[in-house]
Image (cartoon, rainbow, N blue to C red; front, side, top):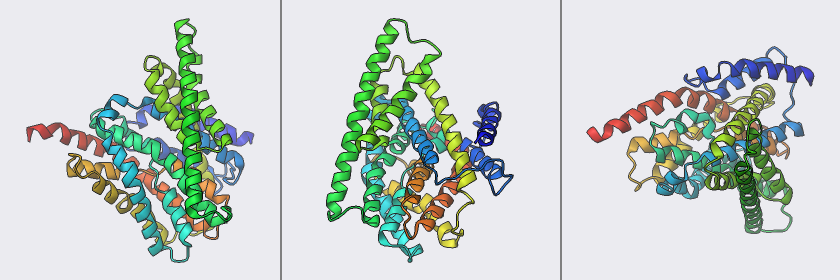
Amino acid sequence: MYENLGVLALFAFAYSVVASRLDRTPVNGAFVYLVFGVLAGPVGLGLVDLSIGSEGIRTVAEFTLALVLFSDASNANLAVLRRSFRIPQRLLLIGLPLTIGLGFGAGLLLFPDLGLLEVAILATMLAPTDAALGKAVVTNEAVPANVREGLNVESGLNDGICVPILFTFLALASGSGGERSTSEIAMGLLVEEIGIGVAIGVGLAWLGSRGLRASARRGWLEDPWTALPVVALAFASFALTQFAGGSGFIACFTGGLTFGAITPEHKKAVLEGAEGTGEAFSLVTWVVFGAAVAFQQDQPLTWPILAYAVLSLTLVRMLPVFLVTMGLGLRSDAKLFLGWFGPRGLASIVFAVIVMGENLPGGAILTRTVVATVGLSIIVHGLTANPLAAAFAAREKAQPEA
């Protein structure tokens, strides 16, 4: 354990001193973390020895996603979102089900030996997007605000929405649903996951905001404690909601939106520290992914797995986005831009860890396919984020003169 912690800490220090420079290159943080994990893991130099099957690894991954969701949602520009909510609304309400449906169809063609529910689980695991892997897009103010906020809100909500869907398929596949029908299982999970998540997330955010504002009025809100409140609220929202039977991910996103909306005067100060903590947790998660998952699977990397990974990042994602954004006044290049920047990342990893614990007959294929898709996404989206964002912004700027 001490050797693992020492190696991770030294790597974190080394990365921190060059991180700002790397942010201006096509090499994103997740790619660096992943490569280091592979090189330091058992298939490389053997410097770290991590087991993805442990409960501790799953906990770290889940809390990392919870913190990222809360802080990203708190940073959302609600004024812009109110003016352009139709983009994320269509992406989530129509585009997400279409993406799962297309992913299911691709899985049936490429994996005939998998059961129907296993194919549905695979499609659901790879439906959520990760805006952190396209950070150069969602933080580039030269990119139109409606596009940036659309992608950011979509990535924040789609993993939370996929949670009850995934658990429904898992309950049916493992037979844990008892004698209840599919519709009863699905409705029960949706009501519990979403209802409890929203109630706890919004409630804790409201209480936290009141506490922060009261502290600020008395002059108590000073460094170094400004970094702690958002981290504590995110973790509390996730843990309490999971304990109560809801979706901690939905709680974190709705709580973050609420906190950011009702604490505008203080959120910048308290979010800076939270984002740094989120980066540190993400670093650990991605390194573990590289060391314990990427090249540690029993299932070989076959051509159907590679084909599914490519389809998941292209046709399965881009076609639904292109179709559902028709009639919104977006040019074709904007639709393609929205469709391409649907990177797969942290949520898919967390889902894969959850599915690994279910011991499904086709679990090895499911996990290997998620690994291949996320790994490919890290590379291609990392390499294209900065140049494509710059090209799209330049085209958008020049458009009125055309």
